[in-house]
Image 1 (cartoon, one colour):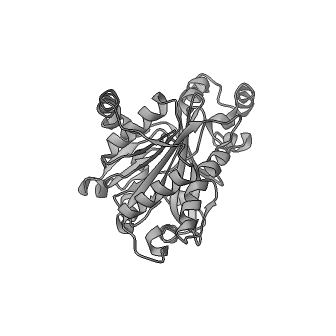
Image 2 (tube, rainbow, N blue to C red):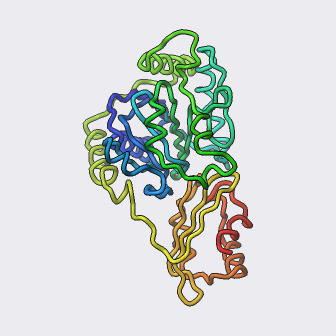
Image 3 (tube, rainbow, N blue to C red):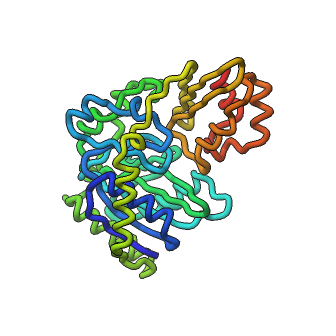
Length: 329
């Protein structure tokens, strides 16, 4: 089992590192890292709808797309990121992954006198206020979970950089939602710098695992591959922003499990093109389902018949068949 404390704060490099470790290493990995001011968006999100583009450009905030699902998060040097990479247990659901990998973080904070808990599908909270958002990705038999830990992050930049999407906060104001965020440092009984917090987390996790983790240093080959991934993928606007969808039909709806967006191009009653966006979690990439659905007739009976051949929960973790159909009707 490896642990890695990264010192690079380049978000493109760090996300390239995530993918390299996830898809190359066979050993379990625990990693702590930070990013300069940036917005990290979920794999299936529409970047243009999630960010305040003028503010982002004006303040030189990088936008980087990650491999996992979930929503957009703001990073700066007052935020600490943690990553666990391990083998997936048999038939493990995303909710079980979140519980498994956030447990050591909750225990570490408890050792500092901070009572934190997992709330909803993927948030860690203190007194009902969110300080950590978590996301998972699955590749073959491997699972990656990473999360943010707002320690002394700029709440002003966090609020300004992310777009205000009213449909995402049904039943509550955007202002109210932003106020339900907190920094860990505000709940400590004694002052601690972010560097001291990182050192504490490292020691706590290693002590709890009684020597199972060993420090890993990147080899020249590792660094070369990470640099290649950064250059070919994570520094490209085509990956980070994608293209703003322009389809004849679109529908955006919030469900209990998150925001879901559908874009459709239909010709003579048949799906010519289709795109899904949202902050949902998945174990199979949604692009596979998009490929499957091209050519389907756009009527309820045809879609119901088609759904019998797939497992919807592989692509959208918590969706029901009726919720999925609702997007087309």
